[in-house]
Image 1 (cartoon, rainbow, N blue to C red):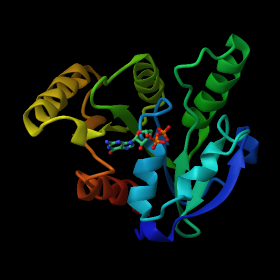
Image 2: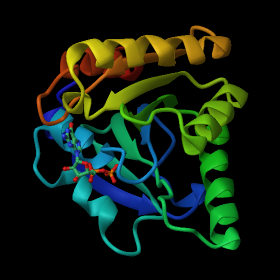
Image 3: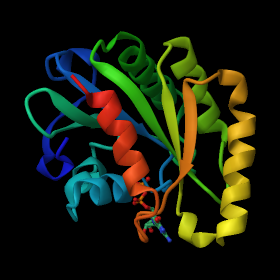
Length: 196
Ligand code: GDP
């Protein structure tokens, strides 16, 4: 898949607004500031592709990027550190679980988690939803450049051990958008999932 071809298609507030459910899709999820936009931009070799998702009013939406007619990347909304009103959170969760459970073309979820504090509440929620929907998850431990190689590898091992209860559907790797660490490994996963 040529990720450099990715371009913004549309934002959806609910399932019915998503593009036609055909071809193959991989979704990116992570709490805000996990490094999701940076990862998508690095992957697609475009400076501002995922900025679309940060446009005020679009942060609660599912954003779609297409490489071609049949292969897409999807930027899922994530809530941040700020306290979100319960009603908003509930709406968001409904929206997200609808998408994860009902979207037929969805092949897997890339879950981004800061390597310095991985597997927070958001991440565990996402792993549980994905497990319920029998959806594979590949965890990116982002900003790996913030740690030395040894500590980064031991964090990876710790995370792999912690998620082993989910079975082989959940995998993990280290990643750095800044240093482009793990980019080939990420591309390998995406290519396998997006294979038509
Ligand atoms: P998002 O909210 O998940 O889309 O996160 P962003 O991609 O906007 O990144 C949040 C912050 O982390 C920004 O200040 C980025 O510059 C920084 N960041 C993202 N990726 C990396 C990385 O690989 N290494 C380092 N050192 N910082 C990163």
